[in-house]
Each structure stands twice: as C-alpha cells, then as structure tokens.
Length: 89
Image 1: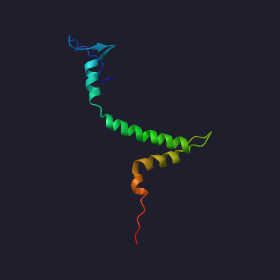
Image 2 (image 1 turned 90 degrees about the horizontal axis):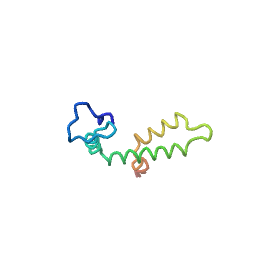
Image 3 (image 1 turned 30 degrees about the vertical axis):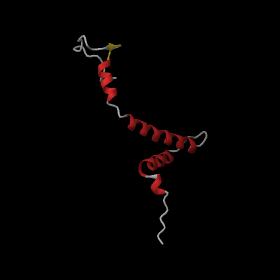
Image 4 (image 1 turned 90 degrees about the vertical axis):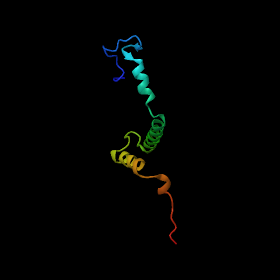
C-alpha cells in the first residue's frame, strides 16, 4: 500500500486514484506476487500452528523450548527422509 500511494506529480489523466491509492501501481504490485509460494508458506505455517495448538498445556500455553523445537523440526527435518528405515544387512 505504501508503494501505491498517490504522489503529487502523478496527476495525469490516465491514472486511476481512489482514496489516495494509485490503482495502477497497486495492480502492478499485485501482479508480481508469487501465489504458489504464498500458498506453500501458508500451508507450512497452518500446519505449524495446528501442531502448536495440539502440544500446548491448558492454562499455560506452549513453552518457548517446545515452540523452538517445532520451528526447528519444520525448518530442518524432512519428514519423508527422517521416517525411512534403512536396512543395512
């Protein structure tokens, strides 16, 4: 929104301005969003939030250490590789 604010020198007849926002600038910014990356990050953080809700202690919340372990698990451990048992016979 900050980058889309109307500047005093942009009063050309082709600019679309509503409530102090240049809609052309806003549209160009929104077109640059990587929606796939946003959905992926949202899924990760939704899963992390769900796990934090499950592991909290009623009346006390979740400890800093437990939350740090959850974050580390999601950041560094690949579940598919961590659960694979390698038979070395």
